[in-house]
Length: 227
Image 1 (tube, helix red, strand yellow):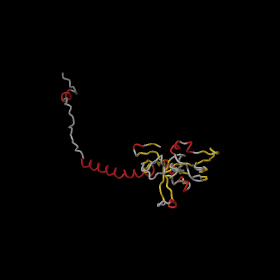
Image 2 (spheres, one colour; image 1 turned 180 degrees about the vertical axis):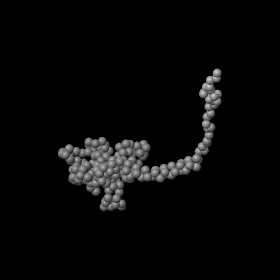
Image 3 (cartoon, helix red, strand yellow; image 1 turned 90 degrees about the vertical axis):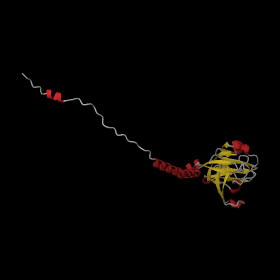
Image 4 (cartoon, one colour; image 1 turned 90 degrees about the horizontal axis):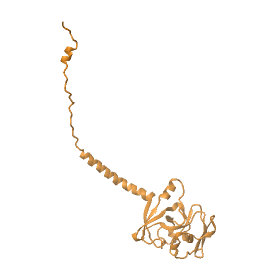
């Protein structure tokens, strides 16, 4: 007696096939040397174009180098000293719509016009002086001294005797002045009181004409100093 097994033929027909892996196609990538050179050249050109623009922005709005010309700030500063003047505070005040008012005793650079009336060949010049009087102060120059009157000092005080810069003032302050400063005015003087063209001559300056505040003397190296 025979028995037909439906799976017997299939079982005999099926053979285990060895596992095969798909062929691997290897590719090689050659570096795009020409593109790298082009990209490097473009980067260099970009730096050359951007660097001067950054330098201009920094000079206009952040800081600037100045060289002292003249003896009016002796003994604090001397002729040919190289300085760094900080402009950021003034720039930020203008951006925010406020007036920049430095502190009493700060040494500032500002623009003064009308100097031709005082023997200067140029009508407009950038000067460096020390801030003595602030907006609203009454400034009196008399008997070789400066006295400041305001709501905090109704009886008056001499800034040179109360602030650190006083040790640099070695000469008496000539002049005969009694003036009350407006809300945006400053009274400035050179530390060399015997040889300085300042507010004793051309009057108060406007706060809007301030360029920046002295923060550093970098040359000569032997006199390098932070202010």
